[in-house]
Image 1 (cartoon, each protein chain N blue to C red):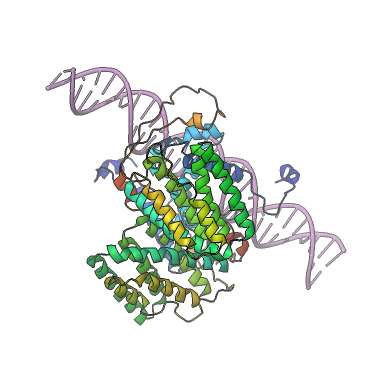
Image 2: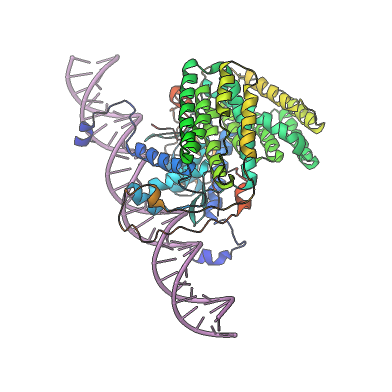
Length: 273
Length: 273
DNA sequence: CTACGGCGCATTGTATACAATCAATGCCTC
DNA sequence: GAGGCATTGATTGTATACAATGCGCCGTAG
């Protein structure tokens, strides 16, 4: 990083050091792959493998995995590695209860802070949701549905609330992957639109509408222990690193369920042993 | 894995690897020092210094600092280091709004899940709070007051809610350190007791009582920009490492306020640059 | 044929060393 | 005397190498 750095000619006084941006990109790609169910719960996330896929060292990958673990979408097991989390039934109920609390507050705030521009952006987003639903693009629909809740939270203006909601939406996405009734969409078609309508009209019952919506989603799940189907890593991220490709990439079957440990104490966030 | 492993006679099937316990202990001590205001906002947390204080390498310290940063009590600045966070006024308001949302839900849940044993433990805790108040032990009172909210959340049985509340209480503690009206206690004397009474009677207005309590606390603050008084590290953690003690330990004056960056986007949680 | 025990490989955890960056000090110039 | 620039010291960021651990395979005994 000598000749390269000389050419960098720092663009802004506090420009992100480029390595950091790369790490953010990796984080984003893994996170997206998890929440849109490209990486099913239980998939093992091997550091070396991810490192060569993204062309960086293990250190960088490790930091990303720690971050994801803290947000509850990845479960670290000591001396065993990182896995896409498999929320237990108990955790599922807790996550939805938390979402009801937070999103009620989000909508209550949006009632008097959401700008017409924000409403417009959300309406546009709803059109994309409809398109995905019409095209039966399940993966896109899941992602877009979560994004709706996230956008609403961010536009409502409380970044603490939206930050926490981001974690909860990610985890809820895993929960849906595990417990959705097979073949049925969990998200009732037009409740998102109804909530936005109520907000636009400054209707006082809008927060309760959101709460009911979340209750509907939770009720549409089958909250008992299901199974996951682990997948290959290189395949989902496409061939960005093609060196010695077809060597030992059979899917891992580590997807067992020790739900006790995972649901119990989430105080310190790094799952031990 | 030969002679040494043979002597280990693993005590439990999934025993914590001892190094992990050490890291937890370090985390706990730094966290406690921050939330009870032993380490004021703006204090620089040098990796080397902390490492030699606790007798571990920088790697371990670094992980702890990342964790604390993710919880919002430490602010990482790229190539500059870690500092005890200084929440902006905006962030302060957002944190309290989030606490109202979450703790309302906590109390609502406690109404039908809090056991008599739990109530007893909370009453005992309230006695300790009273004792600290009577003794004018401000530091203890701050810590105990936060612990009350935390205990209530944990006893109410939703670990997702209590996990998020833990973060919020920590950050609120920093906020109080920065914005408390000098010389006044922020926490009204017996509202904690009143809330517990209401829960015990299964009174439906208990959640609203909690919300009002948090509004009182927030209103008791002076939410405009104040200053911090950085402190020495070795001094607060007691002399566990006394090598070359009085060398370069003058307080750092890095406590400037760039609130824009801190309050803005808390999406990714690691403060860049 | 099954169960148990040992061995080897793959992967993670940790420390150490090096490179890059930042803050401060001192010097030089205006 | 004040301001700006270069050098120095300290601190962080990153990679590499090594040690520890877990897992699966194979051989053997019952």
